[in-house]
Length: 138
Image 1 (cartoon, rainbow, N blue to C red):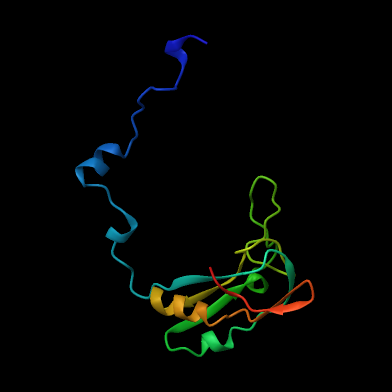
Image 2 (cartoon, rainbow, N blue to C red):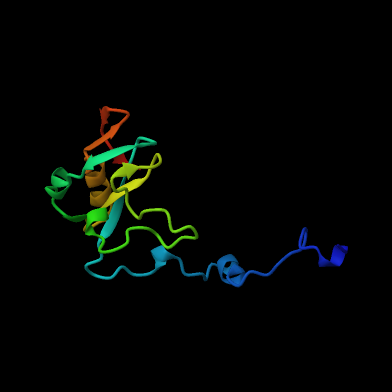
């Protein structure tokens, strides 16, 4: 390959570079929040592999400002992502396949309430190698 055909060491223009450098780029935190926006916080598995026996979000749902809990049972139809291999579930369902796998989302009026509720272990029981464990947030 000739040197002029190589991309290595060559500067490439990025479409948002000028706005970012000038301080004119719009970021997500710059956009006004729509009234009634709900915030989500994931509840993730602390175990790398296990059998998910149940989901109980009652403690989290009892907190003021918490509006709901969404998990695999709330998804109609196919629960897998449309990724390349189409083999990754949106939420853990039946089994936990990796450390940090999302079991569900807490929905609340503000981000801090959602995070606090997720810390209440909205998914209280999974079993890994026959040992009862507790889930916590990511």
